[in-house]
Image: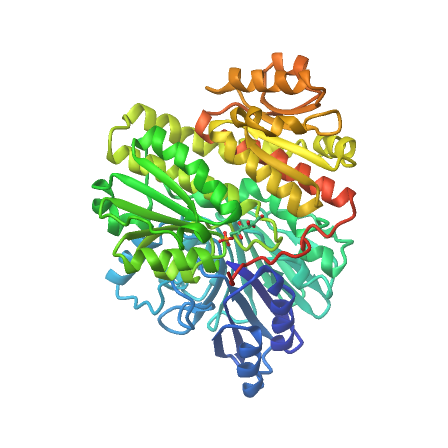
Amino acid sequence: MCGIIGYIGNKSATPLILDGLRKQSYRGYDSSGIIVFEKEKPELVRAVGKLEVLEEKVQKSDFKGTVGLGHSRWATHGEVTEANAHPHADCNNNIFVVHNGIIENFMSLKRQLEEKGHVFHSETDTEVLPHLIEHFFKGDLPKAVRQALLLVKGSYGMAVVARDDPGKIVAARVSSPLVISVNDSGGFVASDPSAIVSHSNKMVFLDDGEVAVLESGTFTVTDLHNIKKEKEITELEWSAEEAQKGGHETFMLKEILEQPESIRNVIRGRLLPKEGAVKLGGLEEVEEKLRGMKRIHIIACGTAFFSAMTGKYMIEEYAGLSCEVDIASEFRYRKPIVSPDTAFLFISQSGETADTLAALREVKRKGGLTLGIVNTVGSSVAREITAGIYNHAGPEIGVASTKAFTSQLVALAMLTVFLARQRSMSLVLGKRIVEEIARLPDLVKQVLGQKEVIAQLAQKYASFSNMLYIGRKYNYPIALEGALKLKEISYVHAEGYGAGEMKHGSIALIDENFPTLAICPSDSVYEKMISNIQEIKARGGSIIAIASVGDKEIANLADDVIYIPKTIEMLTPILSVLPLQLFAYEIGVKRGYDVDKPRNLAKSVTVE
Ligand code: F6R
């Protein structure tokens, strides 16, 4: 992933493509590339780092061609190098592909193509696409693309050009957005309308399984079997800035609402439902070592630390391993015991957090086995750990972490199944958990569907200056995360507490001006939570409860209730945190703050 742009028409393609890349640069990228047909000869330029590096290289060449593609890459498979940057080509420098998404069966496709003599030059999953299309290509690019895609598993938003079938861009999508637009001067394809809305506001959004063929001034859309599709033209009334946010008011909201998709991405290709197991390719090289481990020690900062805390409950309950968690800034200055039977797991969205990195280096110095759950491929943490799991949540622009957090929790749930199935977890239980993980994208969507109800609730509570968040067991870290979200987005004082700890001090704060958010799904600690809620009610405090669908008792006790669907206890945090994200967001907006850039905070904390 990240940004795709293509142009075909009667204007010089290069400046239009560079402009399209610049407009998508807000999504984050680490390298970029462009292919332009200059007098039918393909001219490919790729660069690592800022777009300026690519621009400088391209300007030296002064291409005038009128067909081309561009891509800004945010690494998912393979390091950040020029060879891994898109576009990728076939063996004959005929077919060029830019791609967002993940080709799940790329390893087996690559093996088959190599047996047929194809030579690969990158570590990416994308490179199988031009080679597979080359395999079918007999002068008709759309046909070869359709034939190739019938063999591909995974997600893609992609655009393809061929020297030997000039005058066409072929674009296709499954689970990765792609939009086309045609005007008098030519046709555009992009992964984000913001890249092309300045040329025309008339867009055609491709749906999953569709293939579009753009020629100068016209386009057709079919399915993978070449059955023609009628497409609606949507007129966007977005400003360029709104377009970058996918029509949402803020990146934070966009990222909250993207969670069904980001969770689909973290689980894609990793669940083995029949075996009640998970396949974590990034851990394969340490699989045997993990079998012998007695302890897991998780280290992280901020929101990532709260996912670590949640992971502790998962790993201890199901994998039967003792699990310790540490805030990286504390861990690095104490004298941790690094023993050979302990695996050290570092969780970081950015992969650049200074304290997490220092803790990781300390463990490495002492010879410990280091693992990671990281969102940013090629980041320092990702490079320095021995083995790990990528989140594939996509770039997170809003400073407050939302979609990265839930994808960390899902990665931890999968890691738990992985470790547990190496040990004593039964096939039946493994199947049950894997089944529930697979349902998460739909369950998450159901919770996010209550956005308006939560907005009304936020209106009711927006004027309070203090709030308490309580939860137990799996939802204790979620109370901490909910309070953190409210603090950072709306600057309201919020305390997160383990509900059982409340009566050891903080209950003294409770009165009618100090509402409590109580996370109490129908789980093993439900009754205990009800007692805590009663204690708060008895002191005049009001209660907003996050409860499971069908819980009638809670409605009599709480002032307001937000319901979440039922799932197994271990996965409830992935649902219960969503209303808390939306609640904090709505209160921040109602108080008039810039929720994407809260004061005093940086997205990546690269200093101590
Ligand atoms: C809060 C937030 C931070 C980060 C923390 C760690 O919303 O985003 O607390 O979670 O700074 O950052 P990463 O995960 O990049 O190591």
